Length: 257
Length: 120
Image (cartoon, rainbow over all chains, first blue to last red):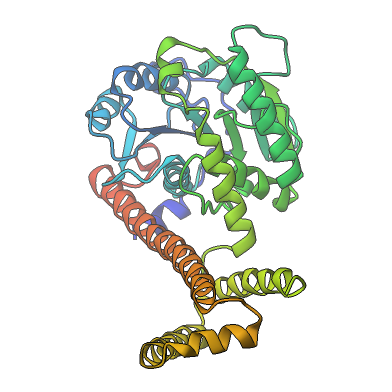
């Protein structure tokens, strides 16, 4: 019943209001939902959400079954929290966040943002602004569009290999295959149905982008390789697991209905 | 004998792929049960008359009956392994659906629909 009321509620005729000047009543980006997946990131996620909330009024933290009190930290920071009772994986958490944010009929843009502090809020803001200007449905962050140092050599080589793998398996050609910073319009977000629940979702997402036929582009972003994010990041060996899972799915078909 | 090997391998792989693409169908599940029964019957027969595996091996073109048993064992194990993988994945999908539905409904119950605080 609440949903009916909300569906009838219409957003302001001019949604691109630049801010009212009244603290806490900023109307900027109220048609944007930021989705932050979080699994045991309590030491950093509070600061990340705090920064995000300065620019985006709608932030949902998806706590993927953390055991370190991440959910409480996120709630204290002022974000909405959706909590998985058990750990399901990165892909499942993103899907949950999208599904939750899509319930807001005023939501037009969906930003995926990592919880470990590796992305800059300024990049997310710039990406949303570009989405408003250009006719795009998917905008994906890339570390490689601009020459930026700071990417460890081993990681750089692995990301290049991942890029080749994506190109071969999805047909989508991107300079940075696994950047967690992405912006979707409602049109694309509404049709995302991830079946890969772990880290392999990134590749599946690119296949969905290719299959949707919608317009996508890349946006140069800076990834902050803090000691924390490097320690928490995926281990390189995991790319073998991901590749095998993806090809198993391709050969044997998707889940039954 | 040399020609039969790649053919057999192709058959096994093809059967495996076909079986798991159609694993949800009722006929497939029934087929697996019939296969299980046949296997049991064969096992009993082989125990009663040990010469049976050798006779079968001769028919198929395998040197020894024990080798034939080994081949069958490998195929059955491969089937079981892949079946386990997919069974596990189907279960995981269901778990994800349940946990997600619970998480979202709990969030809405606690603080209302997303964006509701703005408009109302």
